[in-house]
Image (cartoon, rainbow, N blue to C red; front, top):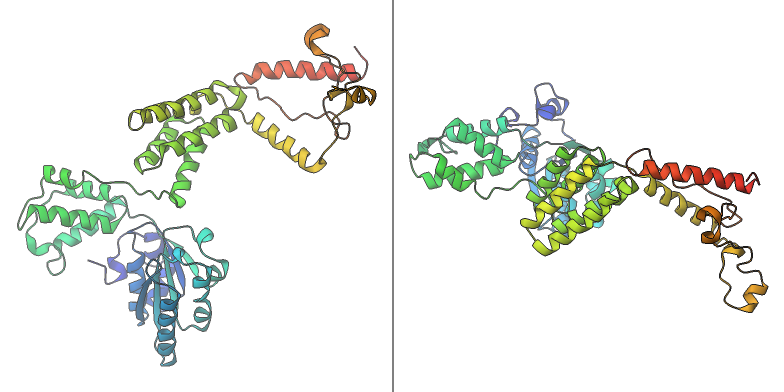
Length: 423
């Protein structure tokens, strides 16, 4: 059922619609080396085959999962021979991100000489997975997951094609059922066709794919999720940013998407705890306690019961007051520590457990705050002399930090006055 022309491809209208630059170049035979980046089943291999067809070139495919450097060299040598004979080669490298730097570098001189038209396919972000030398010689084209409507069109084609598809089998299926298959395929044409084929096999020759049968076929469907790839980091980024934006509904959606995709709930518990200290902070100190307690609850209950404890924390973190003041203050303090090195502790703040230390001035002038009126020795400095007094923590006017701000503003004002001898 693979398309034989660009017009038969479903999806990718941005790249392959009538008049689009890539389509015009392919149909004219003016193809270039490229990286095709997109999710599984979106048409990367099909597009590479069509490139070879329109360019009247030999199509050679290798997989980075199965091939090593000797295989690559053998394929490149054969392509070089064809090039010497005036024949072009489209070299399709599936899962190209799995090749290491040395293996990727092997393609460079052949791309330069034009002995191959290199087409690499990857589901991972090329910026992270491919070296810059290879990227500089290739155009990166981003392919998208195929829409439900386009998947339905591909399924209709399979049902109507009597030569290669299911057209001669007399299969009967309602349009609503085709849309269910398309939704279950989650943007993957290959998966959609596989699900239809399984349903057709169960229905038998001239059979009707009824709702009960289709429910059985679709029972174990899963959404696209790569536990170690870019989709994983995109989704945890979305979760974190929706919590930060006080959008509990969106945050809960991304949390559920990650659980549904097979993400380790312990990883999510750890990230939620991080959000509690980075984005909620002292505006609501209860958030950290709740995150740790939910983590503990999950440890005790496991899935699926413990999932609810984590979901509850997602909602609370997104709904409560936000402050990154502690996060910013900690960063500022770390910068000063790096820049000023091992500044000496002021003598009055040092312990003096021995006579020698006392004679050297250790602890001299220190005032015990509990013995001072008001409980704070306002004229007493706390920083090394080389730094002077600093202000790192600036509470925000939200949540509990409103009260903290009032108290600290009063204390800082009183300290400045005390150091100037005004009180």
